[in-house]
Amino acid sequence: MTQLVWFRSDLRVHDHAALSHACQRGESVIALACICSQQSLEAGESSAKQSLWRRGLSVLRSSLEKFNIPLKIIVHDESASLPDQILSLCEALEVSHIHFHHRYEWRERKLAHAVKKTALARNVLAIGYHDQVIHPPGSLTTGKGGYYSMFTPFKRAWYRELTPDAWQTWPAPTPQSKTNITADRIPDPWFPAKGCHDDLWPAGEDVAQQRLAGFLEDSLEYYGSERDFPALDGTSQLSPYLNVGLISVRQCLDVIAFHQGGHIPDAKTGAGSWVNELIWREFYRHVWVGFPHVTQGQPFKQHYDGLLWRNAPEEFQRWCDGRTGYPLVDAAMRQLNSTGWMHNRLRMVTAMFLCKHLLIDWRWGERYFMSHLVDGDEAANNGGWQWCASTGTDAAPYFRIFNPIAQSQRFDPKGEFIRRWLPPLQDLDDKRIHEPWKHAVDDYPAPIVDHKAARLRALDFYKA
Ligand SMILES: Cc1cc2nc3c(=O)[nH]c(=O)nc-3n(C[C@H](O)[C@H](O)[C@H](O)COP(=O)(O)OP(=O)(O)OC[C@H]3O[C@@H](n4cnc5c(N)ncnc54)[C@H](O)[C@@H]3O)c2cc1C
Image (tube, rainbow, N blue to C red; front, top):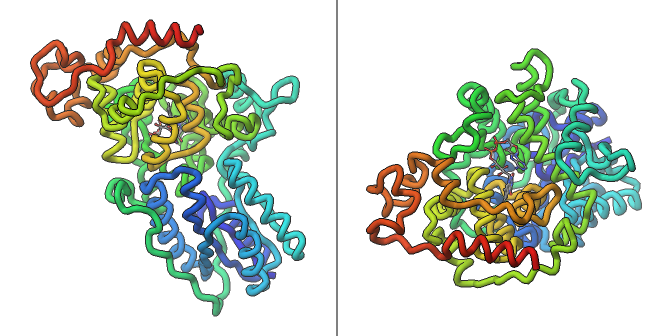
């Protein structure tokens, strides 16, 4: 009874439901990962994310070897042929069961469904487990039985249904007897080398665990008050690791509970605020499954589909390059372009600026983020963009328009973050740095739009 574990966005050996079940069930365990450049292209994934995944796979291969679990790799051109290829491998290796974790992107759900169906037809049982969330989509519903479309009631239900076994981690795999089956080589990168930022995002579950431990020690206590200030590095920067599964949400909650005397805080403490963000992550996964139209490029609030965006390509390019003339927006875009990551406050500021100041379709920005973020995540990215464009679940109302100057003064009061990314503004003092157009500065563009005029234009646009 050989068991196959299909690794997807879950590149770790610890707290791995599928691997744990496979080890308990079978006489021998084999691992599988599938690589499809076409699929990554369709998802619009960045080189940075693909590189983190590939390097994470390489570490996983070595970790699995310690348990005598060889990693097989299927490289395929398009997902339609993958179920057959997986099942051919199963036949060759006499596999009786396939174990895998669910993913919630529609493409991945379709694929897993096809694998299950093909497996069944060939007398192999494919079993899916929920891994990315504490409460699987569909398990938290409103009084009427539907999916939640507002975060706060979702969060209440999330806490209400939470029991300690929800964050209990899965037993580590057991070593298998030695096998003649050899592990496959990890293919050379199949994505452009430019923009990988490998030095900034080392791979491996140990790295992710160290990052979590460092965050708990240095920042968790102050998270509630510091999380909005990009110069402080007060957030965990675990998003890339959560997204490729180098660490699990259960492992995060497990250490939080350990530090908090065995429970998950919901108060306005540092730990409670951090858990709140993990719940946002989960909320958007539920939205992704419960409201499939959002996975098809449509606004959550469908009446907003009629908005006639300006879509000015030259202005879009200036936004992408960090040349809008608004320092906080530009510094943020340069952080993204240079590191593959952007602070959450700045994601909100830049996204809202694109939609509301420039009236450019949020889907353009969503794609740009996806193609540059090392933590690109379809559900969270879409949720964040629709929040900023006021088209989403419990989005900012359309008349809420961040003032990029006020945001800059409030969240980067000394201009430290701005100076880090915009050398031409180095010499401006803490006050002037937020409005460089009022002072003589070389090598920095004039504002792309006047804030007050853009605000009024956006209000008219949304009203119409
Ligand atoms: C326009 C926009 C686009 C975004 N795109 C993505 C994306 O592609 N991938 C992504 O993981 N997050 C995205 N977010 C959410 C958020 O900005 C990032 O998760 C966060 O900045 C990651 O940094 P961190 O790990 O230090 O977060 P922390 O503050 O340490 O939070 C812990 C974890 O909670 C989750 N999280 C935090 N904030 C949010 C949020 N608002 N929504 C959903 N999950 C959250 C992340 O998994 C994060 O790692 C987006 C937000 C906006 C406004």
